[in-house]
Image (cartoon, rainbow, N blue to C red; front, side, top):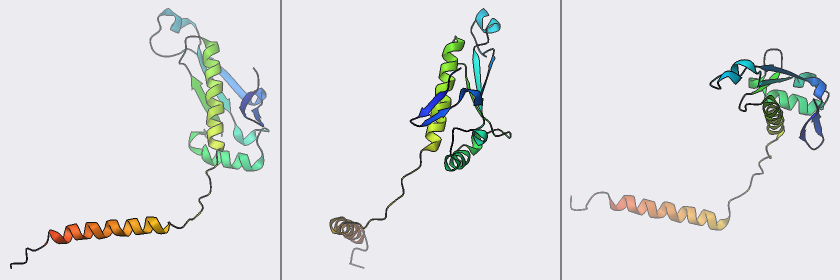
Length: 141
């Protein structure tokens, strides 16, 4: 097995990923009963040497609900009929989950509304107010 490339500068070493195989579920004829095509990858981000301290703590917070009690991230794949395709897809899924978890949202920078947008908003409120006033009493009470 080779290292898993997550993004530029981040590789998960193959030695840190445990790979196991099982028989897939569902229909598939005799093949499903004979061949172990389902792939399960296990990776412990808390013990990984691939991550720096800040990335590790951020990743553990973001993936907290996907980690087991032992701190492992488990990815399975049984979409395809061959073990090789399922293995490649599971590796791609693992890399994608880690990549998405490492994305940090941009900090929001407070801005003022433009004078034109304030004017448009107030004019709209005035128009709406006039519409509602015209619905009121008829004046001949």
